[in-house]
Length: 230
Image (tube, rainbow, N blue to C red; front, side):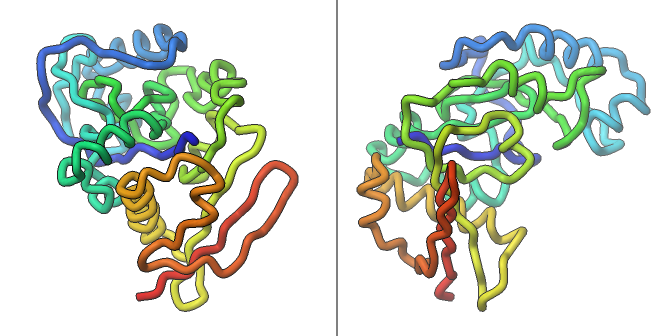
């Protein structure tokens, strides 16, 4: 089973002087070259639109130190996953089963090595729309795998599995938005700690802090409605 995840706007800086490394042999050259040219243009209006902020960054993706993708991202979902605090067997599980969909790098295995970058969700890279760019390159990417899709909606545009399980989170009977990120991190952490590697194991597992209250079956997916217990 592969678990699909979104990246985060918040990222850890630094890393080691090792070249980028990707597990999926997907053509990223055009979008990376264009991004690199834009970041070196120092045009304030262009960079503010690209980054989603007026803050300045000194970015050189081809010469910057790299980190594991799962450690590069530091947003809410990744805080609740807390990868660095996991036992090494759970970390190995994450490295093998987690696929993160980056708007710059496309599909990443958790252990892929990537540099620090800044790209606002939904922004174009010059004339390139990342979701369309990678959608063309991700067809049939994981079609031989069972898929648990924990991505935010925007990143579903990058790749659509033939069939997947998704989760919707409720609190006091109401759908949550921001806190859905925390619940995704909690779910991923428990899956890794318990080495849940198939749909069968997932269906037999009771998540701590969450209760499965409904399964909505559709043609190409099941949506599990999860109620937070506290």
